[in-house]
Amino acid sequence: MGPPAGGEGSPLTPFLFMAAIFAVFYFLLIRPQKKKETERKSMIDALKKGDNIVTVGGLYGKVVSVDDASVLAQVDEGTKVRIDKSAISALRT
Figure 1: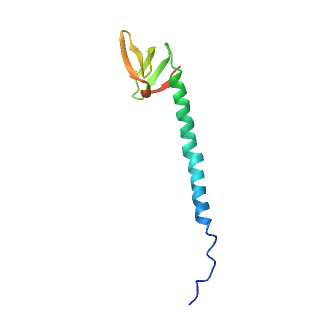
Figure 2 (figure 1 turned 90 degrees about the horizontal axis):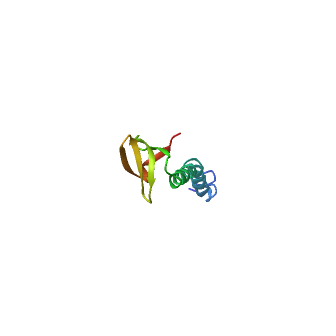
Figure 3 (figure 1 turned 120 degrees about the vertical axis):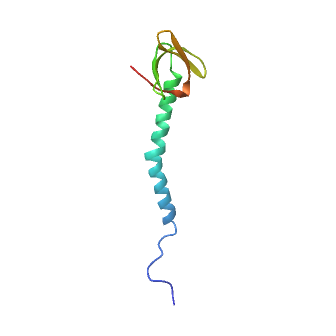
């Protein structure tokens, strides 16, 4: 018996298929996530006194002071809390 009928195709086909899958993942998942993370990092780096913030836990506050790793935020009259910068999800207007 000889080889089965039909061609085997190019040996590069599986590699091209994998490259196409990677390109789809890159443009639909990885690239937008990196862009969003870059925007979030620049927002956190630009925090200043008086900014209104929302934490990932849903706590609303106004920035009283900023240091390297955290912010001191006033959440109510006479109530201030120290919040890690990584826990800040957004600025609110």
